[in-house]
Image (cartoon, rainbow, N blue to C red; front, side, top):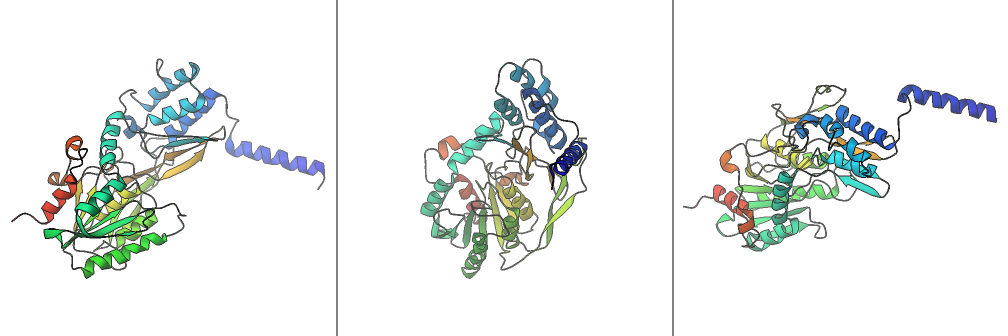
Length: 373
């Protein structure tokens, strides 16, 4: 192929790119910041919900353009571009939002009041502490799958609660690939059989500190606790610049499958339960034998979508509106138990930090399942 033909093909390709991508963007610092802001203004599914929890700025427009503290002003005052972009996205308090550049990453964090509540619950229910405490003080027989990176802890409670089973699910993905149902997930079948063989009356399914993961894994597990086929959520994807421009909703369903446990289940949650864990909660709550107890979840239900920036960096964004099957949205507020009596909070700084070896939420669940005579 001669040089003239190659040059012609390059020119055609460049012209085509201009046709589909539009005019060249301003890739200077202000252009990059403004382009990122505009992407979120158009694509983020919950921009107004997220900004309603922001105490410094009145709107997403205010975040960029506020004359005294907006991020365009901060950039012009000398804030590095990556910091300006990252801190601007942080104003959303959306854990599915991140910013990535070579050698750098920036993750969104919640508002200060939410962060205080989140970290307080996280510290007490840190997975290793929870497992140690549960093993030592609650379970008469405990088993784990993969002791190096425990995804399931399960067993039977002690003393008068011996007819109650327990399983903690750490997350819905491990470090391996997401292609289909991961091997460790299938161990839930053995766990279900264990509860049935031991003739349990009820099981506590604990998803406190569950940070989400694969919805494929989540649905596989939820199907083992399903008594009935149930729709559990609807998803609409942002598909236009208007605040209400969304695709028609797609409904998700849990179909009972495999060996199942359909006796009484208490689903235990806390503020750290997030993302696919919240999908699991919505799926489980549709089942008539499941009772939700604990505290409200994190409130971040959209899938994480990755998109490029005009300067070669990329970001992740929440582009899906997720609602329960009745149309209720939990973004930014979390899913709390419907029954007020099932909301189990506490004065964590006294009961838990002093390490009394008791788990206030678990104690309340057991008392509800097996009341004192």
